[in-house]
Length: 299
Ligand SMILES: [Zn+2]
Image (cartoon, rainbow, N blue to C red; front, side):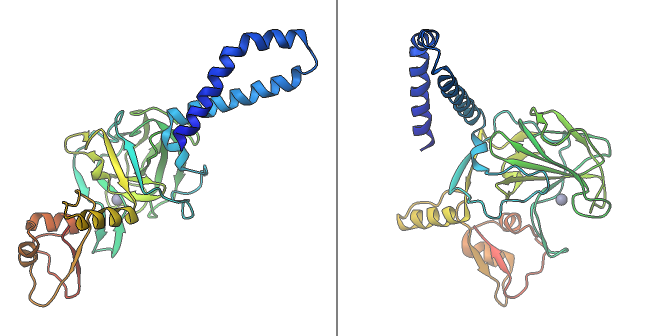
C-alpha cells in the first residue's frame, strides 16, 4: 500500500522533472496562471518532502501524534500485526554490561517491570540507542517513577526510555544521532541505587529490551527484530500447529497451571524444556517455591 503510493509519487516526480523545462517556458510566456502553477509546484515540493521523510524514517508512519507530555499516549492507536524494527546503526545506551533487574513480573512488588535495569555509576554517560527525535524530557521528582528521564522516538519506529538519570543533556523536539550523549546516569525517582532503567516500546507496547540488546556483549541481537502483536502471535502459532510445523521461536506462548505436588523439574520434564529455560521464561529462580494455581510459562 505504502509502496504503491511511493510509486505513484515517484512517477509524478519523474514526470515533473521531465516536463520542468517546458513548464518554465510556459510560465514566462503566460504570466496569468503563474500563481496557480507555483502553488502546484509548492504542493509537489511538499509531497516530495513527505516522501523523503517517510523513506528516511519508516517508523514515523506508525505514530499519528507527537506528544511531549507522557510516555504512553497510544491507548487508541492500532498496533500492526507485524513490524520489522531495523537494528542496524544502533549504539549501546551504556557501556556498562551488568543487568541488575530483568524485564517482566516482579513478585516482590507484585507488578510488571517494563524495562531492563543496567548498573551504572552516577555521572556515567547515557547514549541514544538509534537516530531519532527527543519526545519527552521530564523529571518526576524524588522517589517517584522514572525520576529524570528521556523518551526518544527513533527513525526505525522504536521508542526508547531512559530513567533515573542525574542530568538531562538534550531538549524536547531535538534531533539526535545514534550514540549521542542524552543524559548522565543517576539514582533519581523510584530507584534504590544508581542504575539505568531502559525501556523499548513500539507504539507504547513494551518489548523486553533483551530481545533487541545484548548488554553483556555490547551488541544487538541481530540486524532486525520482528515484532508480532499478541493477536498475530496467537494466529501464527495456531497456523503452524495446524500444519504440524514447528512454531517459530518466540511466537508460541503457553502456560501450565501448577497443581499439587508439582515441581519445576516435573514441569520441565513434562514439556521437554530445561529448568533453566523455565526460570528464564518466568523470571524465577530454581529455588522459587511454586504456588498452587500459579501460571508457569513453558513456551
Ligand atoms: Zn527498572
